[in-house]
Length: 183
Image 1: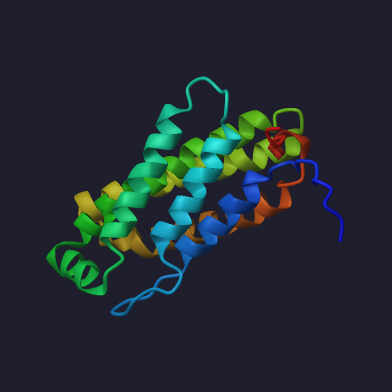
Image 2: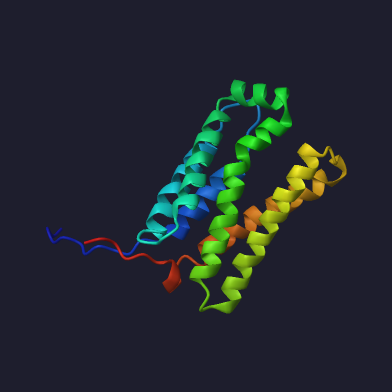
């Protein structure tokens, strides 16, 4: 063993984002979630801070991630989640809106950061539009009582989340996604 100090390594915030999204994908009803959504959103918030360090206009992304942490923490205790769900499914959906907003903003940010790689940028733009579609469909389902499209909305939401997880890990080593560590 040497006492040499290791040089700082680069940070790969997309890996933290992918892991955080994976945590938010797991859903446990009527029991404590071992991989709580709020912890996933906390990872996402930290990674968002690191990824956007020094960028102008990062406020909405960080505010929506912070609100997603709070909203998912409210839904973590089983009794609270059941009470919110029993009261009104639209209320549960409303607590998840900040996460949807974060997802759209993050996908647009990733599309912008990856603009020198057209194929990567197109994938992130596609996911942003998919999540915007989920948001519009959510309003129609929960606000307009158009229950016939709920299954399609859920399918889009799950596919979009899975695709974002895969892309986050897949692109985590790209030059545009690596942040040098502070020395």
